[in-house]
Image 1 (tube, rainbow, N blue to C red):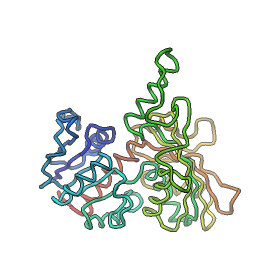
Image 2 (cartoon, rainbow, N blue to C red):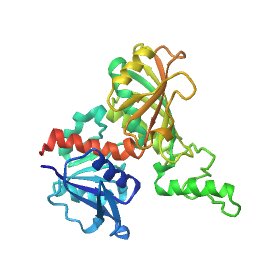
Image 3 (cartoon, one colour):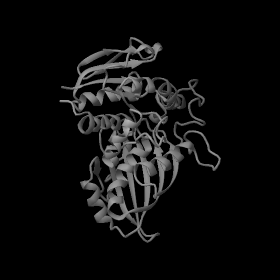
Image 4 (spheres, rainbow, N blue to C red):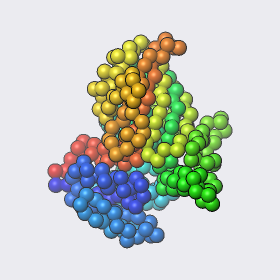
Length: 340
């Protein structure tokens, strides 16, 4: 016996990935509904070898459905997630709306799967920010061994993190550089993204950080450990898919780089590719379509007493969003709802 599953926002990048991953991982689905806004009503989307026609989220009857994977943004989530939850359908939400609610669990299954039982408070589970998700997967096994004091992270985030508009803008601006008369001014981003990097994601806050940077701090504390200090610089780069992170970690006790490498090799959800030679590391283009979080460039930081540096790469549409949501659904099914 399987589950009755809803994917809300099924026509967007993340929603389509959710459907793909549910099919790829053979999630036990008895019935599935693909929802979209009225302007996308009737659009066809793929689910394995099936074709689904999207239904109107505004008039959808949530009763009788087991779980809903939401990829519709905060404003729509604010309207429809409470309706689904009230009807007994557990919401797994990819927006930022519920991430910081102390009564709602923020889950990365490799890190804090046991916190999922908190879903009963509001029938809602939050999916973290894409840049946080891959980082805490890398931090968790090292934290268990040597206790992390402080993390300094710089991100190199792909344009797909800004949605279809971000992808289109990079593509159009790149063409415009080579084709006279097709130049495109920035619309989605504050400056030209083609052949450029932009040290600004989301809005600025009073202390000079951006909200994306604040999210990484707040979410890491909630998912991993409130005692860990985190400082982040988040940068948008001209890459279509795949977020990269340069992570500096300071521990309470010494951790040798060889031991750190072995710990990460054995950790769930991680693939270590770390050869000290040209090409002996993973770049974002190589991680696209993969489930894993890739770790490279593991090395001692000699500037602090107990420090390690590493390079972390993951497909942001997968582990950073859709895959993590499906993994939460799997944990929910296996540990809580237990059908079939």
